[in-house]
Image (cartoon, rainbow, N blue to C red; front, side):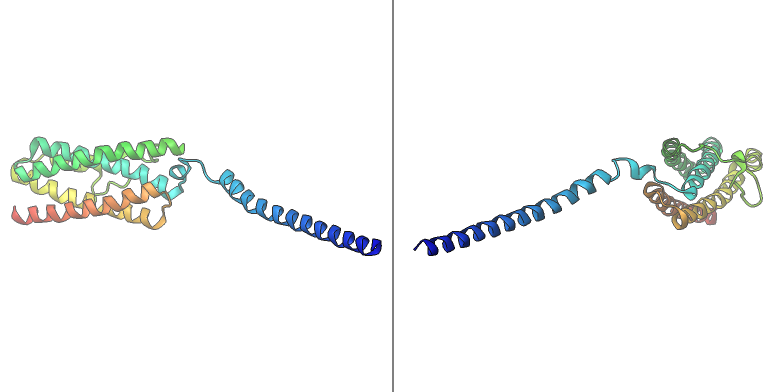
Length: 205
């Protein structure tokens, strides 16, 4: 009887040891997955980091488009004052109203990125319109009036818009900042629509 009891004790002890070992393994397995999300969460980018991620193409796009928009607004403001056609005047007002806020947006990006807000070269960078600089285009427009002004304004603004579309398409190809890419898409859509409108107005003059 005592011999059997000793055997029973050994078996019982072994079963308990096995149970404890399994519990320990089970406990270790349950803690491993929970550690992974904690580690992943600690390495996730902080809110706002994505908007600051940019490359040279994004910087150039913002810098050049600010200058380009400033030129368009300068021309558009002159058209608001001097255009003979109500349609041309209304178009000019729309251009100025749309591009002002875009300049502010791109300026804020450059400041957040720690980049200069203006490119080397100043106002004439990217402003070639039929072989004319911004200053030459403005001088040309200021010398005209009536229907001649309207026609020349539309011709120059069409060329100006085509330059903006090319710049935006370059950003879509080479840029990486999500907000800059989104604005580039919007510029292509908006300015192609305005080019079509201006070409229609030209055909009616």
